[in-house]
Image (cartoon, each protein chain N blue to C red):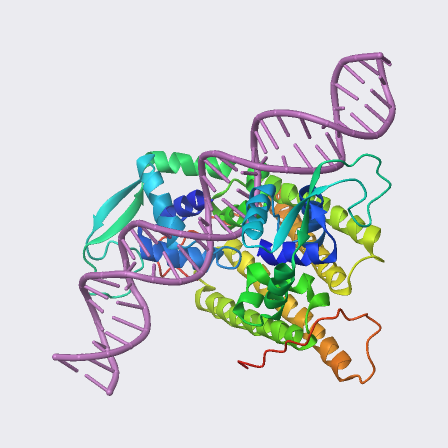
Length: 203
Length: 203
DNA sequence: GTGCGATGTATCGGTGCGATACATCGCGAT
DNA sequence: ATCGCGATGTATCGCACCGATACATCGCAC
């Protein structure tokens, strides 16, 4: 998980650990914490795998940095070619590994770098996953409504409504995606130069 | 976390591991999984602490069981006096440990066994916690709206709406609690004590 | 009489969290 | 001038929990 998040962020700009964590919080903070306790080990793993390098960061290396004076001796992490490849691989995934609870948010956050077809498939996968869950919760409530504790029931119903709300959200997103996909003229968004590795292998 | 959940469930009836897990899923499944990989170690810890005992379960021990014939040799977990004490202690907690993300749901699920005053304090704590978060997300969105990726922004806004929705939910619950608390004993007070005693006790 | 799904107990590896430690930098208050 | 303090910065430890997996038994359908 962190893997995709870190690769995705480093693909936008080289960063050092602290800044990386700030962006993680800003981007994914609503549904995930990502503390240093997992960030640094993950960075080490990724370095060992050859996806990133640790550069000694001198001043002004960090892109978009505010007017800072000193900034010496920080460890700046940077994507390698292999890392970019790995990122493309992760972004192309359109299976359960992309739409389960823990992973969906991260994949969604990097939809801007994701192939439009993959986007739709992930959104649909996520939606049917949630529809399954909705059925499960709904029948569970029905089966036990009378026996159930007042508060337990309230909790279930709140959960059910949450799921239903998210399904509606996804449906809107899917429709938007479809509309912009069928629109003949290109979107104003400058598409990244990703080679269309549209792996049609397994539909 | 599991600790409270298990103690709470065992306080309603002695159970064996499998059944315990089923109830865990039914009660808290919407926001927590609780697999065996954490359940059994937790049970062992609690046994070591003297809060539960493992009884050799013969037939018909399990309350509310369907007409099963055999049912022999299962390990049935049961609350001890110390366990009940510990449960009461956990249920009386009304601090951050009761209203953080991971814990609130479990505490709420056992509100039926919780003191009304504690209930309100937990609900209020949870609400102000979420209001803080709402502020944080809202300003974060405002500060970066222009720079932000389209999808990232959508994710943030969805998160913001989720938080706002939960705040409204909590406000309703708090009002309900207050109403039933300030009602000058006009009601015969069997509001929460819906304890079904026997499985058939539905009106 | 065989297979299969539900019941049932249990462990393992991995991911991520929260707390913590420690060091430097910029800056305002004393 | 310096002291402290909060932000920046790197890093580790212990713990909770998850998902997968391994088994073994039971009841039942075919």
